[in-house]
Length: 299
Length: 267
Image (tube, rainbow over all chains, first blue to last red):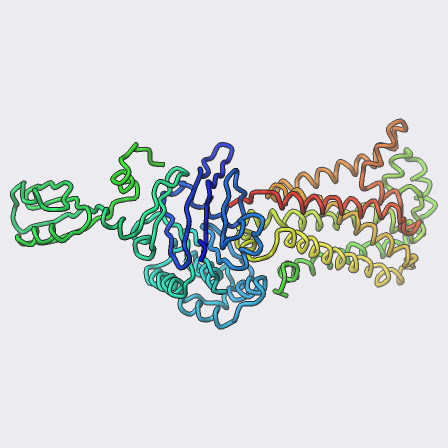
């Protein structure tokens, strides 16, 4: 089966603001593709170009084998989309809103809507005006999933969701993949992408800097461990342990930076009495720096 | 009601439309009780009006200068300013809100992620404006036969229909201009401001230019000329002028379709 999204030198430039530059990537059917990058990197621009809300300056994209601009209406019938920033019609209830969008899609079975609303725990009878940000986000998710589209394009889908509902969202993504359908989701947090995606494209300053398998990425991943021991340690306690990039020992506290598997570090630390252990995910910028050597550019 | 963009837009506006309709009805009804005193003092009024400069007289009375017949009275009091003003306010607001309002409130992204073509959204939004405009026009029309007779205000209902209809066309023309500016820019306040400015400017143009004979032809540039100049309340339907007004609406509407189709939408 053909790729569900193909970006071919896709470029969008704005006057002064940065857009995206010569993006080339493909998303396979049944794949969950994470689109990772700091805020302002061009994630939303990419997504809105795929939806024909923006028109490419050069290059092109196809979605489900159709041209993103010329066949937009047909694409939209088969895609579910959650924007990064959106509002709903304040005066409608959630149920009315979903019915309306369902009607514009030629009808969506009411039990799909009910089912999703129940799982995401969103009240459909209440006016949208009175809903919290999190509940509006949930309605946004329901409208993206409710017609069981072949492809979901989700811009920062978990923002504003509490952790329990995030889990439900991850389940929905898993089920979508199990169905052979595809998901393209953007995020600025690594753990989320790791949690649900098969592959990840990393975008930075409008350019796609890498497309990686999640497995490969994990192998490269770098974390920092802060370990508090019962007694002071020798400064060279972690020297030569596999995976350790850097280790500093200050009396009874050690800060160890580890790449890949934790196994050797934990086993080494276990030789001493441990009071506390904390693991820190590195921020995206630090990961970029670690992976791609930094020109230190940042935003 | 939630089956189409048209239905949803109307359903959303239903309360506001009722208030607008009530307003138009009251606007029409307000003038009836004063009519008998105008008739009584007809001679004094005529004298007073005669003393005015020609262009001011025309501004106040309309071209015919007839003020004391039922048709003349309604033409002067209702259809020269108040009725078009209210209908224009409604249409410009609705036109500006149609696309730019959704875009600014950030509801447009999801709407346009459904398989509804952009042009269909424009068509339905303008359709909702037309339906709303018809509703308000009916309310305006009804006010005359329902409140006029006790006060001997009995104009020809055919001419009344013509006046309401041409006033409606004028409003829909300006509504379409606001729609087009909103669709082209995504900015509601800009659409309201520019359209209201154009309306005020062309109104004054129609009013003042006739005072200077050499540039009187400039009047032809004002949409108001085709409505006010026709005095449909007195002289009945002017088909040619109606077509001009409908043509302005059609051109602006076409521009809205084309400009919205080509544009990057604001996130």
